[in-house]
Length: 476
Image (cartoon, rainbow, N blue to C red; front, side, top):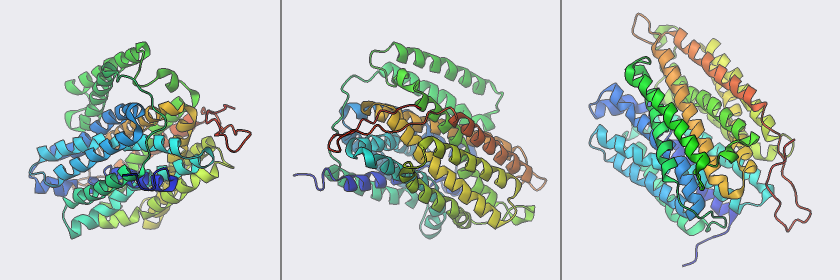
């Protein structure tokens, strides 16, 4: 049976946006309700954090690997595999009888992280060059907004239903999206056949696990403990081995020559730094809002109330992420990356120094949302325009992965700072949040400085409209 609307850019985009939104919800949906899950499954605080850690590890490993596989077997097939993994993981999590099964389910969900790079690759294949920047910008805004929407939705869902519905609802959505994707998304016109370099894949998985594990558990293990230091050293050794293997491989998993492109390495480094700031704000601004008012600086908000105070961030992020693509006619992606990083810096400084009034927090959150919308969209556009079409999946996947590593760094450091400042009443002290947001401001400021090194790119327009223009960037 022929696929419905096959080849329609609008239908394809709608499916990709729904898939990306469903997966991005997984990034933040369970964060506000971890205490509820801990109590219901009768586990410890240290164990329940693996609900986040396991997802992070699986997504970090699967994203670049599946991005490369997608370039070979076809992006539409890889998209269906990723959606199936998300749906299966959600189903397993929804019926999990204990914490061990829930953690395993989160690993399966994390395998769907390839939805992001695959979606960007499909957009590049299917959209004409004059519409590509706008499509990438809107999809980036959907992804970024979905990551924050989970914080807003978690409270009402758990309050009305149950925490298991945090998985039932995404499962239903993803299953429906998968069925539509099978009928709508066209076959990839660009493929790169070849063998997967499993040695590189194994080394990549090894150093990511060795790095992210102590970053996630360092606070409970102790940053100077033997296993923390051993894992960091092992991560360095495995990362060096991975780089050597990639440089020597005839068919590398990640082309290191591509990673050395000025637009690629600067954008990836900025992604890591701003990723730390973004996830730090997503994870700890709601916690700040929920601190009891008796401390003198908290608002005592509920999970739902904290989510509502995050709405200015989400709305601003969605609006400016959607506008980022059209703005490239007048404002380059580099300029947007710079403006976004600068606004992120200003917002984090405001949250550090002026967080005792709801309106100041809401304004700062809105400013951060504007910056986040611009940064997310401009980064993806810079990456996609800088690499050949057949490397879109691997390149965008690695960018997503590096942002995840930055998120781990940011959340680990901020968690250490906040929990290291406890008042006499056993509640977090204000100084911890002040220092934490100043550190996030530093990360965003560092992203601004790195972005200064990124080249300005423009698309080369072909002389005839019926001939597709070359997307290779011209560095200025």
